[in-house]
Length: 528
Ligand SMILES: Cc1cc2nc3c(=O)[nH]c(=O)nc-3n(C[C@H](O)[C@H](O)[C@H](O)COP(=O)(O)OP(=O)(O)OC[C@H]3O[C@@H](n4cnc5c(N)ncnc54)[C@H](O)[C@@H]3O)c2cc1C
Image 1 (cartoon, protein in one colour):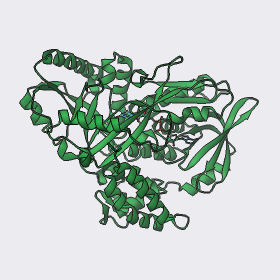
Image 2 (cartoon, rainbow, N blue to C red):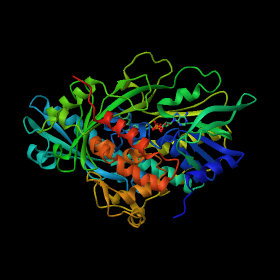
Image 3 (cartoon, helix red, strand yellow):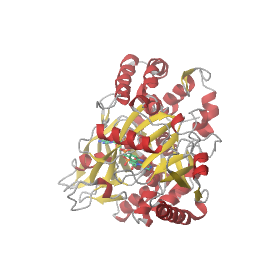
Image 4 (cartoon, rainbow, N blue to C red):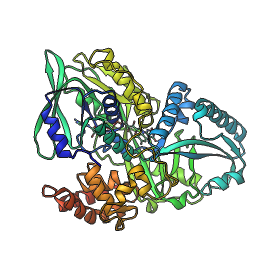
């Protein structure tokens, strides 16, 4: 397979004096923009300061969904758009996105008919909005049928359940597929390369100063259009521009806890639509484990690795214990991770209740011509990319090219469809059409950790631009997110393989030690 190495991409970055577009940020939003622009034939460079999906885009609940919660808020436009995008993703990334059945339990005699009616009719509307792109009809289940579908549910007081369909995915691997698809279409997409300044000419934006975090070398990337897609960090980049007013984003933190699959046997997810404080709670089978979450807490310090608050962990464990037959406790938690939602701040927003802030995205063009895009959700990254490029074309920052190319553009690894559900432990099935290539690399039979072979690490270094132990164990394999202790124990063997692949500048001992420190954080619950 021919794919440029990072060194070759860096050389091309320095060689080209001018391009159509520079994208800042390699999460779902920026990568989606790069794929779309490159697919339309524009010349594109994308710079990501850390690693692809290192920010929010590796920390989602892993749902490709219309958003039942937004249905409850009456936001039909958002739901319809997301359901359409769910269908597109299922086709263009069939190896990483799959349908998933959800069980919504109803408890107690009081109000159970009303609850069933309200949630049931909402979910029937959800089916109608999905139309032909739906995966199955919403069903009303007796308590016995509910327990048959989701054996992990608390049987005491169970009055029945509603069963509906949605989708799930591997977020970080989808981000990698986007990065590699953009590269295959001629874009230069680089991790460990940060935007450290903006270039202006006559008061207009004219490019980006990018710093290669590995060598320290700086490059001036001239471009007609610069798109700032840095998620919760969008305002920091806006401040590199001239005289920007106000903040676009009100960040909100969401915590997930991962426990064994034994807490939710059967392969279906559980949605609790209204917890004691009015939030939703998910229990989702994912890569052989169960994800519990999430929370919604305003957060202003924008750490790369935010830590959970004690109340958030307590909330998830105590709510999960109310709805699951086997109550999870602190000792059952295999990994805890935190993501920051880039919620769009209304122009005159004063309050702090992030649950009521918009889940929709926003596009802003500054007077200088800098374009910022933020908000939205993973599911709608492709629609966001179309919107932001349309906006840039309307402002004559980019030459006009027709939209819609990405609706049918299979991402790298597609269109293989696997019979293995995403709820099952990780393996070669996640590589789609590239599985034979991985199998052909040295060490295909040597497991370094469950679901991670030596060959996969070599593949990560050769084709997926992995530069550190963390890149491999957090985002190429998802072991850090599944079992942080186990991931820490794989650091040394992974570092040894990376050393062979990456050569001299790679410091195996330092990379393994840095990863072990990070994994210790993912094991640690705030003290009670
Ligand atoms: C707890 C939680 C659960 C969620 N669950 C779901 C879900 O189940 N389904 C769903 O559809 N959506 C979900 N979302 C929403 C979704 O994850 C986000 O909307 C999406 O990942 C945001 O992507 P982004 O690219 O805008 O931001 P990010 O992924 O954060 O990407 C921004 C990138 O910009 C980089 N960057 C910052 N500054 C610079 C710079 N100066 N130079 C270069 N790069 C820079 C960062 O390193 C980062 O990688 C969830 C979000 C959270 C927080």
